[in-house]
Length: 482
Image (tube, rainbow, N blue to C red; front, side, top):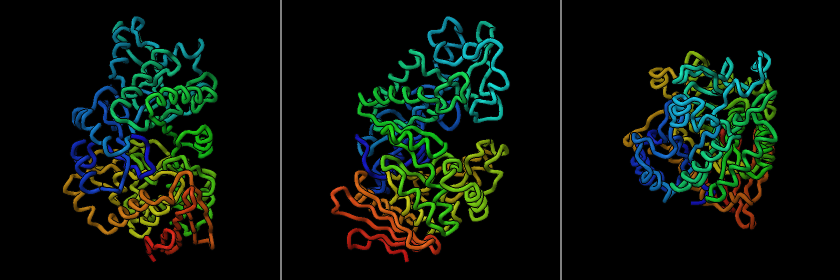
């Protein structure tokens, strides 16, 4: 199924019900017309990071179901799968073969071996300082082989995730085979997770290395196109990188929108959000929440450093049960660029603010993605957070079928569903159409989306200070939340 201009749900296979069959049951019984696509977060066998350390892309984790269950979802929804092009589990057959056979392994070139990557007597302290790191030490892991030899391999993320050398033919074959297999099972869109780390080059910071990163992306796109699959490169960094990727005609993420929207709702000011909506691309997926935290770095320079700091501090002040310690080492989270909270709790569990935030997302350029906790206006799960001591679990509640049956009765959830159904069916949100953004006052914003043929226009009038808003399509009032 091709990508549709309809809202996409982001969910794990066991977060809405306990498996893929129950997920389909919930989608069919509770969410008719609410979403048109599903981003199925990693559902392969994995050894860590909530699925992001995949050991085998050829099978579905048996705890979730099988390929038939995935394909059944694909009959009604366009599907997005994750491909961790930067790394694979150390328990994968490829790395296990390398450990067992060392220099005789067919897969030895799949991995970045530190003594081969760096010249003699390197890496130096300067080399390591230069690397764009996700942890406070060199991104290397010492491996002991079956023959008793030891050496280090590149390891950007957790200890389970061993980086791949995407320049080698053996890895390129693996990439081609994985894309073909995903397409065979109904994948419409591949999310290239952590792709910006995939190119390593001597004397660079090893992050979004140009021009090599473009060659990698173009090679993957060429392969995906043969199977009628689109790509969505995933990157959390300065918004200018997203704009570069968009200029190359890829879908991108609007990861700046979450902080810009929070700033606007906290401050009651419209200028920053309006400026961004005027320039952000149409060929994108918008987010307010994801399986990770709320990104701070993504909005840098769209908000000043003072405004970013204000928004972060307000989040801890206004947000329900949001504490700085949840985004710290104490809760196994060293990513200083994200804040752990559900979006609903980030604005104080306030229904009016939340619905306005989602209305702004629906009117922003692109296709809205709705994380499953956000779909049910979910509050921070402090019990799960404390039980697991994992900061990101504050936003990873497990919903049973029975619990969802109750959640969908809440007025805020019903109003959100109605809003998404409108967004999915109105011709005004044509991605080839136009957007016009005005700010009649410092507190007000008006966004008008118009179809390419000019026949349908949808208008959002909002006051960011008192949270009142109104939606009109042509001359018909759709929502009047004043």
